[in-house]
Length: 183
View (tube, helix red, strand yellow):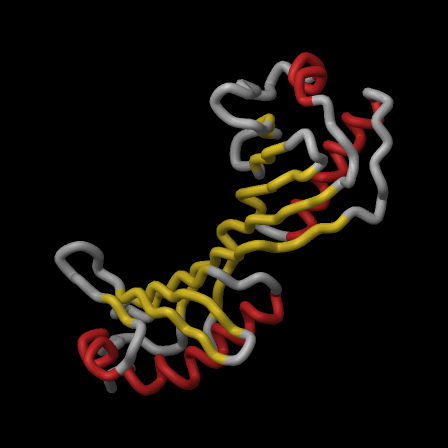
C-alpha cells in the first residue's frame, strides 16, 4: 500500500463578519497589505508556517498547512486577534479544504511510463521537459492529478478531503500503477 504525507493544503474559511483590513494591518506589523496590488491582507505566522490571505468579507484562505489541526490553530489565532480588536467571530465558521498536495511512494517501482502513455488517456509525458508523467485520474467522485515517476514516487493534487485522497491513491495504485510496474 502506498505511503504519503501532506506537503500543502489550501483551505478556505468564512467567518461571516466584515474585517477592517486597514485597522488589522496597523495592529499587526508583520502583515502585508497593499490594496492597490491585492485586495487581501497577507499574514504569516513564521517561517514554515501556513500563510493566510484575509479579505474584508471575512473570508480567509490558508495555504501551506500540513494538517487540518494546524489550519484550525491558525484560524483560532486570527479569531483571537480580531477579538482583541472587538470584532466577534462565530465559533462555528465554515471551513472547506480546496486542495491537498501530497507526496509519497507506491508499493511498486520501475513504472513503465511509456507504456502508460501509449495505453491510457489523460496522460502527458515529455521527459525532455519533466521526468514524470502527469496523469489526470477521474472516477466517480474522485478528480485528482498524479505526477508519477518511474521510481514509484508520486505527487497527488486536487483532493478535497482525507477520504477522497485515500480513495484516489488506493484505487489509482490498484487499477493503474500495479498494471504498469515492470517485474
